[in-house]
Image 1 (cartoon, each protein chain N blue to C red):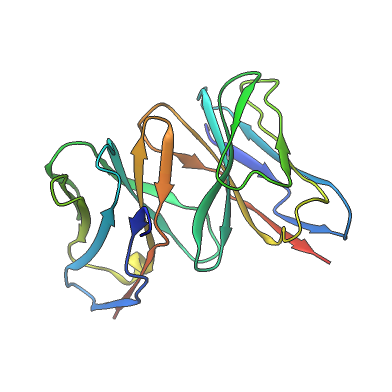
Image 2: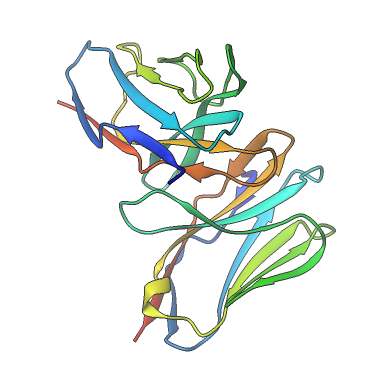
Length: 111
Length: 109
């Protein structure tokens, strides 16, 4: 079955630690996205990529980094520079203008 | 002014009634409009998209778009308790899609 797989489902980060969230899709979509969702604030765009080896910052890119070495994969690293990383992270992919397919999300908590 | 505005709710409707969810947007150049359903603790799921003025129907769902008024709505007919969720309006222009904060719908049995 085609879809988007995010892992892990839950992730705990210690202060000063970098962590990487995985996102893999087998939908053959060119575009991939990372969003952050906080209660009452909706979805905010962190990074997006329209083709392999190219990506752009979204509205809240500070403290995050991404790579797009393969069409299927778009991992997100939450660096120690991100001071408030506790949130629900959603990866999505799309064919142009046809809406997004979302992964099941990763809940990141700072401990 | 927020780019995409929705009433946070909750909107409570009795089972079998029509639920009407509304959304306004600020960018007149917006080209694509989406409705997502998000159950508590889960990821959003695309349920409708619309590009042209007018109505688009899919089963119990109807999306309505009025570009002149910068207004998009979602009607859910014969509401069921399983429709209880948060509904996100999203508006797109080229590759950028902006989400509203969502309206929580409660369908009362």
